[in-house]
Length: 219
Image (cartoon, rainbow, N blue to C red):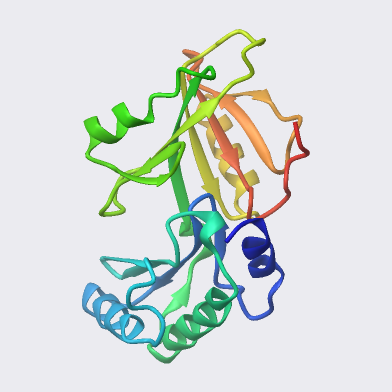
C-alpha cells in the first residue's frame, strides 16, 4: 500500500471509467433502472477477487457506484485488473460510465499537534477507523472525517472546512458552478489541483482534482 499504488492506477491503460478520489478508485455506471443497477451490482459482486476486498457497491435509481477501496493509499496492483473486469461487466450489461457523477465529500477538522481528537468524532458519529487521523462511515453513506494537523506556528483561522474530491475533468466546472451560485475564490495558487472557495458568510470548501489530476506541490 502507499502512494505507488494510486499512481500506477492512474497511469494504467483501460481505466477511463474510473476516477481516483481521496477515498480511492471510484466508478459510477448508469443503467436503465434500479433493477438493472441491482443486477449489475450482483454481477460485479461475483467477480473473483471482490469478495472480502473492502469494495463498496451502492445502487440507486438507475445507477451503480463502485468504490474499490475506502482510502486512496490502499490501492494496490491487483485493483487495476479488477477495475478493468468491472468495466467489462458493466459494458456487457449495457451500463455507461459517468465520470461526472463520481465524487467524495470529506469534513476536514483543523487541529494543532496534540489537539487531534479523532476518537471523539469516531465515537459521536459511530464511525470506524480508516487511518490514524481519520474516520469513515461503515456503511459508506456519510462523508469521511479527517483531522488536519496544522503548523503550530500558524494561527488557527478556522476549525472546519469541507473537501470535495472530483474527477480531474470536472473540477473547473464545479468551481464555475460554485462561483455562479455566489461563491468566491479564496486561494487558487494550487489550481488545477485544488481551489479554496468560500460562501458569502466565509465558510470554506476545497474543490480538489487530487489525486485524479494534478498533484499539488509539497508544502
